[in-house]
Picture 1 (spheres, chains in turn red, purple, blue):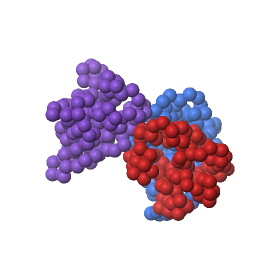
Picture 2: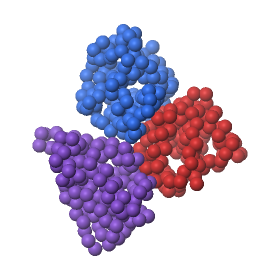
Picture 3: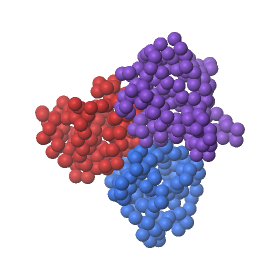
Picture 4: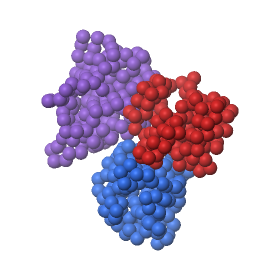
Length: 125
Length: 161
Length: 148
């Protein structure tokens, strides 16, 4: 069973992401949810996950800092991180990719784009 | 090999790997294609309008005519072929072009696409690929054995989706 | 960049988000005074903007339509008012991101804060004179910006 961590301060956003992943055919998944980067790190320290999907704009610890913390941790650095954000533009995307995000998806989520990412880049479906 | 043709407002479905489902001349209409890869079952609807509430009599005779009736009917038919879970199925959309309707309005194609997507979403479904919009008429077919979709348009190269 | 550019960027953002998230297209647009457009108890989403201008984006949703908006976003019925507020805030967050991307110089950066959902009390207290009304079939979203 795959374990996926979804990080977003909005419960609506987390629901939309889970639903979109289901539409893309990602079955047999256990979802963990966090509403900010600090909460996400607590979850990651206690149990492994196969993929992290995170927003950027969050209170307490934002997505960029979460990404940096994951990629600088010997235990967590191999976990792929996808950023899903309303703040997507050329500049922010380049910054996030340089910090080793696998991909940056803009909000609202485009199902075909998510499908291609899961299938062709992450090989999860 | 049998070719099952969906006319306007029709839904066709097959679990026979020798079959092909096809629909012609999608202008503003939308072809909704559902495919279960593990069971090799395909369904195709030729949807003409967004909402059945103003024409309930027509909807009862041709459930594929409207976006709000075609989606639940396709799901019901897929269940008869053993598909119980929305995650067993993918959906692709073709059509919804901006053709002028009898009132001189261009946007019925987009309205059809949006209505189809809204009703798919309610059933935890969505299109993983689509070729919609533009101003071209399209003909589309799906091979039941493989799930391969081919799209044809006048003066354009045949393409896959 | 002037008011016209703000309006066009906002119109495009609402069109993109409306079609993708609530499956509706914009059918009409007009400018109204806040007294004409807004009502007590409507929902107000405010998003602070840091760059390319310092100010706020405001979005207003008619109370009667809001449960329906969030239901259509989620694809399932909403359970309570907290869910409505969270849904509208997320919609506002998405619209704001698109608006700033459209408004900023091509590929340029932008910064915004977290969306906040509140209830309109006294319409006179809303810090705008006019709002743009974007009509989506049977519901209207009102929007405005305020620069500091």
